[in-house]
Length: 282
Image 1 (cartoon, rainbow, N blue to C red):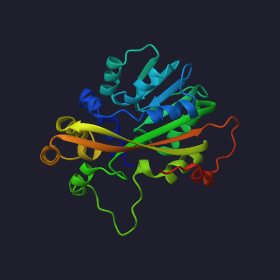
Image 2: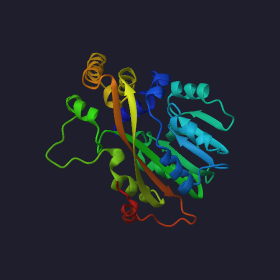
Image 3: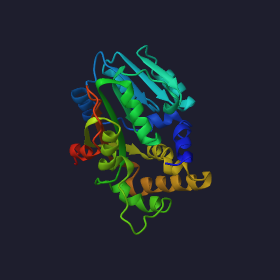
Image 4: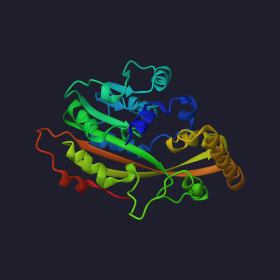
């Protein structure tokens, strides 16, 4: 990922945090149930979170009764939003890029990154997360992907809009989107020294009116990257299709892919070939 993309990831989503939090759906309950069953999320857990954003996952982690969560957020506006909306002595908010944060070694039971870790350089970031976990601790990162691979009528109705603003693939077969590339993500985990890398996929739906949908789209990175006039035109067309073709009631289907892995109780040399063994596809 380019330096420009990294800078955007640290500052591109804090312009309207309250509106974005309202538009973004929570993650499926099955995901949190998996974190509890596989990763030990629950009372007494010590957790760190990379890139909490508006706190969608943070609030659910707090509700699980953890002993402490340290949330590391690079955007000062989002950090301020978190302090205002989630005042809780169990939550410590640190405003800094993850790369510039000093985490105590072998301290945490669980580390998480919810729709944020693509903004971090993978191997340095994963190795840093690995070092912060206790032996036997768990790492979990996940992303929500709208439309792709699901039966989503609105996605089909607006695909031409995205095709007009995204680079077209060349003659070589395009790779899956970052979050859906199970083999690459599991390989990264194994290379960083984690064991038992595994991928799980959850699907869900959310019902939107036009205004809420436009708010959601406004903060998509591919739309944020447009010039202001082009962004306004794009969102106006999204609103037109939502109103005229869907009567202002749009059901969006989304896929959430969860990747989990464990810091081994005894460290051994990483085995990249083991990365593909844990993939579970829908």
